[in-house]
Length: 122
Length: 106
Image (cartoon, rainbow over all chains, first blue to last red; front, side, top):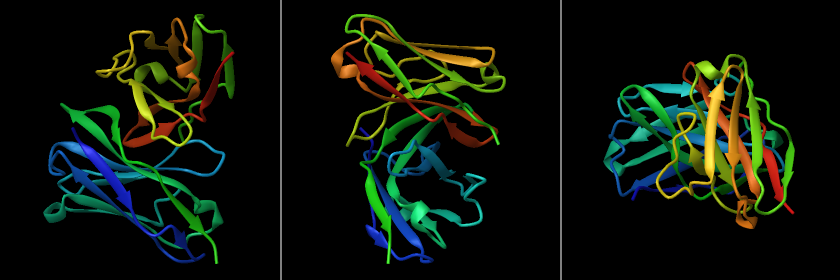
């Protein structure tokens, strides 16, 4: 059973960088799956942030692309999110999630971490 | 950018059938997924590849996708099904979520 654990600071100052890490257990991060970040602002819906594939390929939400970096640490079986120049609009619950890949097809977000609340405030 | 549109809310009586729609340009040419999200919990995938149910998801959940509309159907809706439901698809390599539908069972 794959489990994901998101962790990181719960408070980030405006104009700073939000940094979160997602630890993966019960499976290898170098398996043929996509590793994602999704967030939910207060009172709003889910928003996809971006994803990374084990060989290093990344895809980002066009609306966030200039501020987002997702990286992967194979030795620690974890992947990370950095979001720069944050503002109050970046406040929300952040999730890491796995998208299962089968024969070049994405089967959906099948495993999710618990949500971690990040507040952008001075 | 690609958009998926859902009704903000749907109400259903216990035991009846709930239908939640998701509209997007030529959505039927893409695969749609559906997620159930309850307050304080992580989202749970209930449908992938338009109509496939992950292991452990009750048979009362079913999906379809054709033309510009994907549909999630919950037959014999139970009180425990009350939640927010999100459709999701990929546009090229970007995941897109619908705005979400609050399902009320009353």
